[in-house]
Image 1: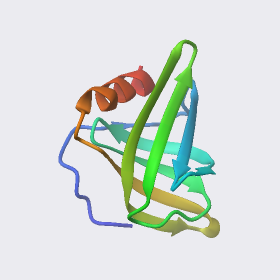
Image 2: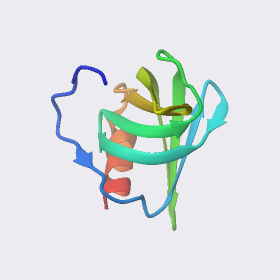
Image 3: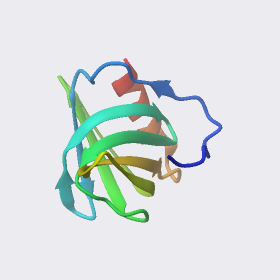
Length: 109
């Protein structure tokens, strides 16, 4: 595992999201298995397939009438158990925090 870098509040997920979360890394779709935690500044999740640190990502959350997209960068990536499952640490872009806050509020509701 990696050294903790975030000092902001985050929600830790015990259960799956109500809606659908789509991840695209460098333009290719990556299946999200589970969101581990989230804040308006970043997300930690488990995904299928390797995504390198430094990769640009797009996360899109859809649930009912909610459809929110945020962008970020993979800060760290670690293989979990098998080569097919990867834990990702994603830093959300902070240049416009409004979408990040909306994303955070939507998936933690």
